[in-house]
Length: 308
Image 1 (cartoon, rainbow, N blue to C red):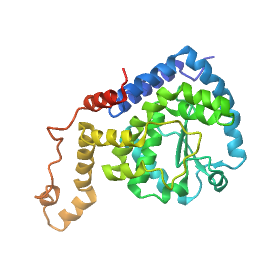
Image 2 (image 1 turned 45 degrees about the horizontal axis):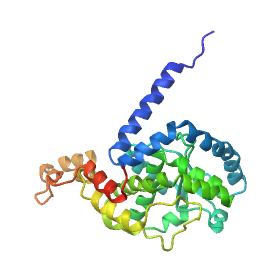
Image 3 (image 1 turned 90 degrees about the vertical axis):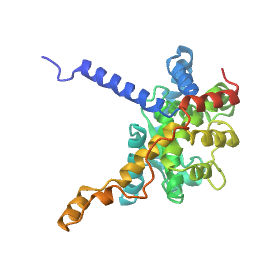
Image 4 (image 1 turned 180 degrees about the horizontal axis):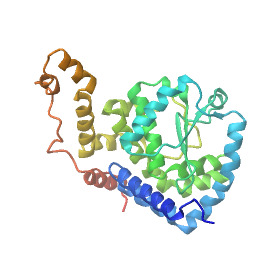
């Protein structure tokens, strides 16, 4: 008897998806961040320690669901934010993880931020934990920033970083050791996620507003990221990059395109669609000649952080 499963094709598709994700995150992410987490995912010594935490994660995740801290998305009220998440995933060319919502009990515990990306160190079993009510209270552009941050953390392999901090938080000594051991990765991880957030927010101002922690839950177990002034400066530089200019040019082009329904309606009314398709005062949807290459943003950030 022959098995209906084609292992060779499965492995091939998995490798192809991995290659696609490598290309997708390389278009916006901080190069030092990608290289460090690539080493972490392939290091035997690091994997031994991370695996010890991962073995406890399955049991802990089950407890979070059965205790009522987290819940599956249900009802029509969850659809708008899920649709936003799908649109942002398409923008970043990222895969969609498993979605969990923070319950009222979970919010009262103060254990969860607005968005918490969780996965093992190899990027598998990925969860994106969302505080639905907290996110709905944010402005749309700020909410898009947080959602893109979470997806980018998972896309860039940071899920294991969050999982390690969460799993070690119950023991003060262990948590201190994990925080110290992973500080080099925590320091650079946030820059890639912030860049993705800026792309989704569509403007610099809401992205800077999202970096203000006041009035937003900040659990103690979260990784120690780089300070806010450095993150703001990095965002201002990335705002001048060709990546941002190209993405916004594409988004502007899509908004200006006429839908087939509008074209049919105009033809039936005997009107010309040329004027609507090419408005006289429309800005030129081009990448400025003085836009920065991504490598320049990376180089300036690396110099300020004094990294090799």
